Length: 548
Image (cartoon, rainbow, N blue to C red; front, side, top):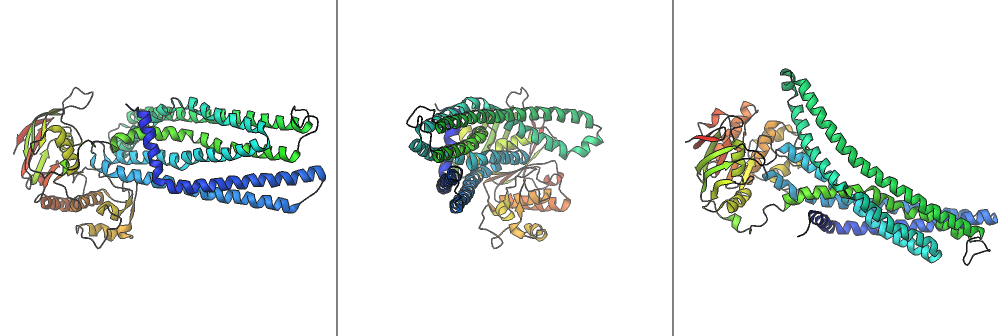
């Protein structure tokens, strides 16, 4: 069985092919850049040798050297542009696959999902935009300079070859355990960022309840824990750089001593007693530090690999979740939905959130789930959405078993919670899920109020979970998305909470309209739903009180 490490490495490696055109272009410009630098060193050493040995000044030679030095930076600039483009291509495709999964995966709220996407993107992009390009550049440039060094002076080539073998081995040794540190850091970041955000949102309530000092001590402790994890990651990065610089200094010193002794004619070999060619020595000494240029960058970006591996291990279970069912099965038409003897407790918790639930839900209509906070409403909705498994009892669609029904529900239900998930993209993309769609397409009329407020209309850019929209506007956008992309079952968790009366009335009327053609399951405290619900389920601390 392939280990998690191999799975993550293989997954990261497969993604490289998605931007192979950009990487090939970047590699070509990298080789041209390195070639220009080698020629620059050759002309510079010729200018210096003629000046110091013969007292001749040749401005044309120096001018040629400067031309090739300029070419080196121009080609390097284009190489970096293509590498950055490759990183953008791969990360954008990963996010495109991740967005629908997070949209339908209701085990975390929109804030946690947004933090997750941001963290994963920030960890994957440096890997593809820096680590992979520097790894390829190290091989290409080092190979080129090794060939030049062996051709001109084999002992210099041998020293460089040994360093090329030893440095990666050192990095592998140092990298042992670094990935675990990165994974811990990512998990803490996601966990505590959501905690900090939650406390920030409720700061007024905390102050009013005179609970500021306990909350301050709580957050201070979490902050120290996160800072400690960050410091551990930084220690590994500093250690990697320190070891590299120490080894590079030794290698360059060895080459300098060897060339110096050769110039003096005291080094055994063909030049013993004769002295050494100053131009050749100066040229080799000039290109030797450049041999380590990309190796330095490669090692400095090595921690990006560890971060990417840690992120990939978090991503793979999400991207590969529930892939064992043939697509044809989950397209089966919706006939019946029954829940019998359902009990549920979260892992590592002895407390049952749901107790002995029995429901027979209609194929169409509005089902209202009521109950005080903590009564199990959200848990029941997540089970109905296929996000949580039925551990004890049956959740059956069309009379099928739990496993099949969970798969079917996951694909054929849409979910809207109190804090909707908004993509990074335009308003148009968030509503239509299509960059090409727009104002010419039919859409719910209630969106006109939002469009009228936005100067850029459909092209209004949304980011950071739609911070450019109010809470009510987010709910309306999500509801419109649900209406334009209907599924047999729509699930809404507190769809009108904390909204103004006008927006709540719009959402209520649209929910009633939707329930005419599909099954809608709504969890809410609002009494307005009682009058329009076809079925009402009352929960009290996880127990089903009645079923109307």
